Amino acid sequence: MSDTKLNAALAAYAHLVLKSGCNLQPGQELFLSASTDSVEFARLLTAEAYALGARHVTVRFGDEKIARLHYENCALDVFETFPEWQALLNNSMALGGAAVLSVISDDPKALVGVDQAKLVANARASHVACKPFYDCLDQGKAVWCIVAAAAPAWAQQVFPSLDARAATEKLWQAILAAVRVDTPDPVAAWAQHRESFNERKAWLNAQHFDSLHYTNSLGTDLTVGLNKLGIWQGGGDVTVEGREFFPNMPTEEIFTTPDLSRAEGVVYSSMPLIHYGSPVEDFSMRFEGGKVVECQARVGQDVLEAIFTVDEGAAHLGECALVPWGSPIQKSGILFYNTLFDENAACHLAVGQGFPDCLEGGQQMEEEELKAHGVNKSATHVDFMMGTEDLEVIGIKADGSRVPIFRGGAWAT
Image 1 (cartoon, rainbow, N blue to C red):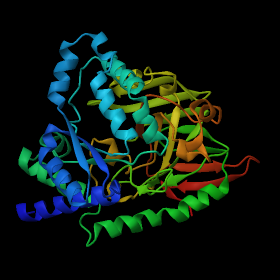
Image 2 (image 1 turned 60 degrees about the vertical axis):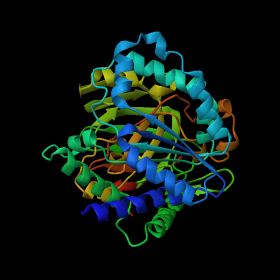
Image 3 (image 1 turned 90 degrees about the horizontal axis):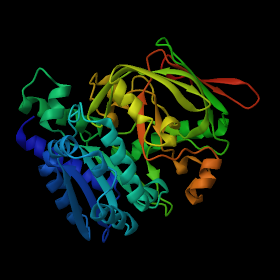
Image 4 (image 1 turned 60 degrees about the horizontal axis):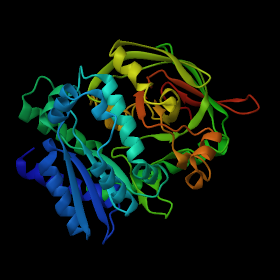
């Protein structure tokens, strides 16, 4: 791809992200978070936001190498307190109605070997200090969107045989294809993509399944209970005020929030997990009474164990997502080492925070009421892929009847 063509595609991507992902409105503020590796794309987004009538764009840059220096040189207690100025920034942006846009370009190995206790402490502290910010996102009071930008360190993990320049260009091509920028009208393509989920969601919601039973040849044999008021979502989200947006671009999943106390059995990963820049590979979890009681990993055992120590909810499920084998990202044959993409290649589960909008009336409920209905509360949300080409998912109704949902890794009907 020539530089001219790439620049035109990136401009189209920036427009798509703000128009469809954030559904940015004239006079609205934009709160943009990005890495120093993505400065050029952040500038494109800022220019496009103003072209769409943004009142103001606030940009906050992070740097993985500096973050690593902090973790290596600061004591644990530094991370147990979140900076007041940063909490004020985050909270005021969300409470003030800004669209929240995060651009990720993480090096999959940026924080390998960092003390997991410091990462856990930082996650806890940030969620306490930024509670208004996260509540706005979780309760549908703010528009938010996560997208990706290619960066050399990430690109060379995905395409290790290429030099940095060639790998970055190839990763950009893969990102642009995954978000449909290669179509004649990306905004229209995403509107059609939203509609494509509706029939599946309607069928799942009409079944009122009590639980899901997952099995495959890796050894997964897991039964997950669902909430009585549960709703299946997918193909974008809607704020309580009725504004449509896409929290993730790309997205290929239909998902719900399970009952935090009803998961029994074992699940095996089908793809690596990159958690805070550290890989976890070939891992499994065993659940009893909805809680992870045992976990094993060939690579990253300490990282896996640390995930469940963030808080009580970190060891319970917050999401069940259905993604058919043969999704566009799976067909690409690329392992992105990035959850934003890899979760859209296969069925996945997530431990940690559940989604209030996956419960009837959930966006109007307080925390205790949500928990009473089975929606998990946590300062973390960690997706992991467990879908395979031979995955079977059976929906079980309250009367015990069983309905195939997935056969051979894809929709049964």
